[in-house]
Length: 226
Image (spheres, rainbow, N blue to C red):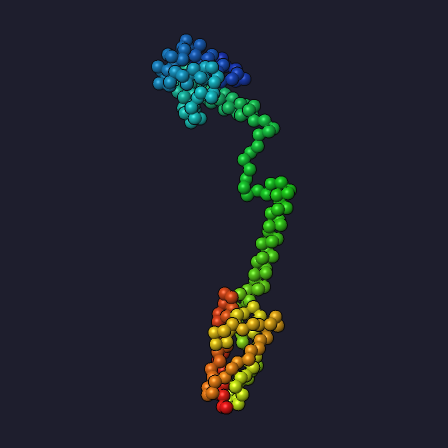
């Protein structure tokens, strides 16, 4: 059979399209699409589509390939001849239907037009600046606050006045409380407060809290002796 296939293939012009080759092969064997369908078990409408050159009515490429191989065996022609013709016709039709207006799907990871590239560059610069700013300011958000107490300068201080001026220094971005009362901190970080004393031991708790960081406490005791 291989010899017959080779012999029959010599009668075909490889410059012809698939339907022309297909019809010539059927004519040489004295067959039509109905008889060929009986020999190959290929549906008649698919064979008719091959005969008419109507590729749109054919199934998916793997099925067409199988049909062409079966058809070549039944018609005693070289299967590669039909397969090459089919591939060339598919490619030709794809190029014919694809025009200059056709565009490939845009890749979401490509930068695209110059204006879009500039947008990405600007966004990138902004993100870098935000990261640098956050790193620069990270101690102001996450660090451990410090409290420096000027007055009372020492613990267990004995005084004769019914009040004392509290003073000290903290980071201006930290929250400062004295015995639970929030104290205003100047831009330079310094603070002052007049604190009323009760006779005996007075406990004064200074507490500084960083925004996302830790909390620090300093306790001073002042003894008021009227």
